[in-house]
Image 1 (cartoon, rainbow, N blue to C red):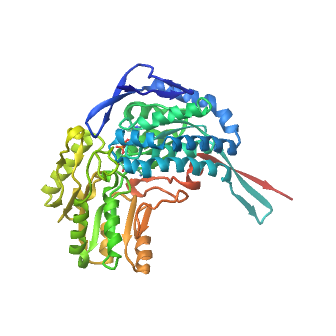
Image 2 (cartoon, rainbow, N blue to C red):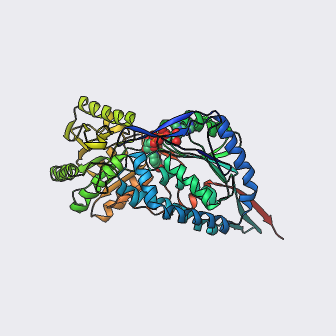
Image 3 (cartoon, rainbow, N blue to C red):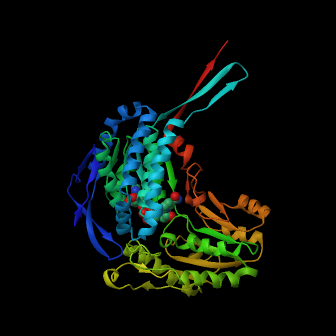
Amino acid sequence: MKNLSNYIGGKLVSSAAGGWLEDFEPATGQAYARIPDSHKTDIDNAVAAAQHAFPGWSATPAAERGKWLHKLAALVERDLENLARAESLDSGKPIALARSLDIPRAVANLRFFAAAASQFASESHAMESGAINYTLRSPLGVVGCISPWNLPLYLFTWKIAPALAAGNCVVAKPSEITPMTAFLFSELCIEAGLPAGVLNVVHGLGPKAGTALVEHADVKAISFTGGTNTGTDIASRAAPKFKKLSLELGGKNPTIVFADCDFEPSVSESVRAAFSNQGEICLCGSRILVERSLYTRFRDAFVARVQALRQGDPLDGRTEQGALVSEPHLQKVLGYIELAKKEGGTILCGGRRAQLDGRCANGWFMEPTVIENLPPGCRTNQEEIFGPVVTLIPFDTEEQAIGYANGTPYGLAASLWSENTSRCHRVAAKLEAGLIWVNCWMLRDLRVPMGGVKQSGSGREGGWEALRFFTEARNVCIKYA
Ligand code: NAD
């Protein structure tokens, strides 16, 4: 059993109170590591270390800060195979996905913001009346970054990289369910010689360590990615203290397939959008709306592809569907299958816990599941399931498709498939979602604003948006004769 440590003030340390939490391997259902069960004292220590480091780090030229991020990126890239294996082991995701998506994206996040650090510029506004304004953007101080379990190192670096690039010092709280790669990243920071206290990583439970971070008087901003209920709790604690908040929350994303789509890619990409990472990506399309004249053909091709997905040991490079992240999460997803049946749904494929052999016999696997015959307003079609479960819903008109797509409390992402360019622009402009993909899914440019509307969050990450979030703007107005 490996014991992981917090990373505070440049050192690997246990929690002050000495408690531990178990870390499980989803593919076997066995505990294989322990993390510190951190408390307020550990957060206090981390914030104090970050405050101590802040004057030096914020005064370091932006290009130098960029060099540190480049150095960390090179170490992550060097350890790609090791980190991909660790991510797969810790989260149950296929190692092929960790190799091709999670770890390369962590490298890209670090490199992107390393470069952005020296290219960030502020605005100037000249007035006709003989005055000029310029905006100063300064780092906030100590900021908190709280990340979820579904894309562990990918989302951890997506937050800490812009925060550090902008000159802040960070206290990060990774998910207690998938702490391993954040711990390995701490070791890489030590190897790189990153100045002590610039980045601190505190492991532990959300309502304990997470809450202590959110409520800490000296933490100026919280960047959070996770569930909508958690976002509500964080907002209620942070708002009275007037902290800056970035909230990236849940989704119930529609994939809209019009009869005039290019059929092959619309089927294969809808399957990828639905089942990548076992459906445990906030951007996954879990409600597939199909124009009625294409419905039967699309449904049959879609189900055939889903049934062909290779489920297996996440550490096997050929596996396409790994394990769900935890036993409670598996039970939650299975609960939604029962609900869907009660609501009158027809299970077209899947619908059960999957039983694997050998070392994965006790793992938390679930058959990829497709359901039809459910009304758009039922709970199965309204609530985020966050697993390998999708519904198919026919529609008759463009207006009806838009109504169904927008008819949930969420508004994170949407994808639409049509060869009619006018329709694509028209529908895209009417969708209540922060990210809209046309004839593609999860094609990511790190410069674009990333975030949701309605209960999918507030604020935007990515590009300049992230650097603006992690800086305070002050305007200087100079009148000249
Ligand atoms: P979660 O909300 O349970 O936990 C996320 C993080 O918050 C963890 O580190 C957790 O320890 C911490 N936390 C929990 N309670 C807290 C509290 N009261 N105060 C402070 N911190 C607390 O979410 P999860 O189950 O880890 O992740 C799945 C959710 O994340 C899904 O809803 C998914 O849609 C969402 N998500 C959204 C995006 C996005 O960009 N919008 C990306 C990935 C995941």
